[in-house]
Length: 64
Image: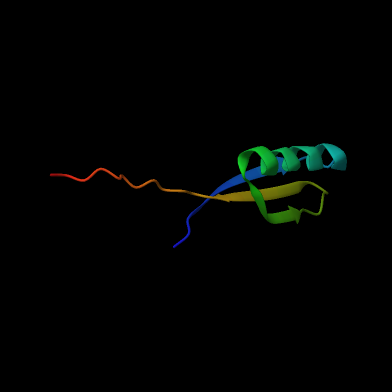
């Protein structure tokens, strides 16, 4: 089963589209986030939910 971690971001309606796009692009390129949900409320504020896979490492050591 794939596990995800989520990060919710809120942007005010006065934030420029270019600034929001730049921040989301950097989060995707350098930190592995992808957009899960994008919502706009009636006032024009944006709520973006990002997600990325959780990778669990398993020990390779064996007990004797």
